[in-house]
Image (cartoon, rainbow, N blue to C red; front, side, top):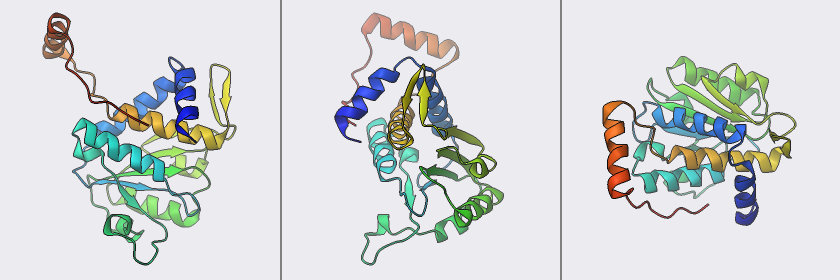
Amino acid sequence: MDLERTTLLRDLLAGTDWTRRTTEFARSLRRAKHPPGGLLLVGTPTAEPWHLAAHLDTEAELAGVAELAPVLVRHAVPAGAPPHLAVDLRRLAAVRRGETLLVAAADTPGEATLERVADARRAGATVFALDAGDRDLAGLAHDRLSIGEDGLVADGLIVPVGDGFEVASHLVSTAAGQPLPRRGVRARLASALEVISGPAPRPQRSL
């Protein structure tokens, strides 16, 4: 999906239930208690989540939150791939308690992938799933955002599964880069100071 179409769909979905759901999922991912390098991102044998990996990496840099930068786990690593793109499925077998596994399944993950996800969960990983309606994956995820078999549906607007998955990936990564809501007296004091002095400038973002 190109930049213009992604921006248009993001604007159309503003204020819808879909925006709320992607924001809640993203905040849950942001709150996950894994160390830097402990967010593992894996796709399916036929669909690697390149765009989601890139978006999360950008948001991690802009927000200064190293924990958001994912490690892309690949089903097949071509010869000569650079180290950061040469992490294969053996990494899932080495998952430790306290790490996070984000499964981005734009299509059917397959039995072998599901088995590795189940093993990672048993090892103590927190499993997040961004999927297109896979029921088997739903049973393994601690937190899940599903586009559904018919695509992304919000307030009567239907976006096909392929485009909807890309939009969801962008909305999730953007929301994950936003500061978490602050609570209590400190939060109210910070809000009052922003009213008095104005909010701090934020870095420019791009899709």
